[in-house]
Image 1 (cartoon, rainbow, N blue to C red):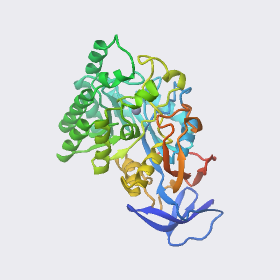
Image 2 (cartoon, rainbow, N blue to C red):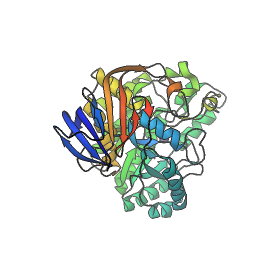
Image 3 (tube, helix red, strand yellow):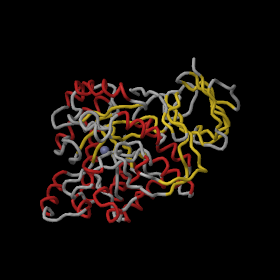
Length: 435
Ligand SMILES: [Zn+2]
């Protein structure tokens, strides 16, 4: 048996930090107590914060089909560097993961390289409800109501309804990319003679997102399925979700770091590198997203980590693909804000560990408890550093947060009892499928 102990850390237990020791035996947390005996490997966590390993419920690790942008080796290292021990991976691959056969093939490839734990989303199409009904052990079904990277799209209400019904029957979460496809197409045709990153928030404007969110919430009310609204980016969407949650029902919503911390003025600095779906919004909407998070009307923070190469991103607006990396900076960005008292460190544990495990039904992870898998992230709130894209482990090698000074750094990332990241260095560890 391999044993690892963590001593004198501020350990997040049931929403509160307490000074405790943790003993890990093989892949399981075997004891949390005032004192545990020294093991073969020991971590002195005096003065450090010990979180349940963070879960990123929305990533694109690009396998199969776009391995030059990211693969499970580079993506895993990026996750470990960011303190993330579990990722839920999206199905907009090439080919899109829309059949059980393709899902099983993807599982085989990912199992070989994953150094963090993972779950897979299944992709919905206009006609694959039979496949959805046959799928097992998935995080949920991703429904692209508007097109994005890849060719997954379900833009007709009757098809979205059928998909939601299949999800309801299987008790799957329907995770929606809520942008209205026909409004996007109309805006694209109207603006096709123009160019520049400023176009993005005009083509995929806030109304585009609000319209689709409204449709998704109305269908959810009718069908009663579990609904998760991905990457909410405007006040209008978050108000709609809040109202729908008040009437009850299985509804949850996530926001992403680029919508929490960036507004459209970033386009003047980094141009098409800031192109992402949904777009970076006005200062007003950015502040609204931040406030909704602060006020408790958001369930979780995910990254929508969607890497593209520098060569791809620097093209003209119409050619530059949408998406940005985020998995290495999300936790530090949230920690930095906590250091300024914008919110508590406990909240970060809720948004990025407890809530994703609860909403997506990930068992024995997402909390530090005896008997759970030993996924642990240890953080030093005293350390300051500056984001440099070139130093990141993702293949993208750039960041929209370039130059941001941050307080709070990831010191250790432990996956299933193995130290996968230790004070700047990646180590050997292996992830498991969580479903
Ligand atoms: Zn995404």
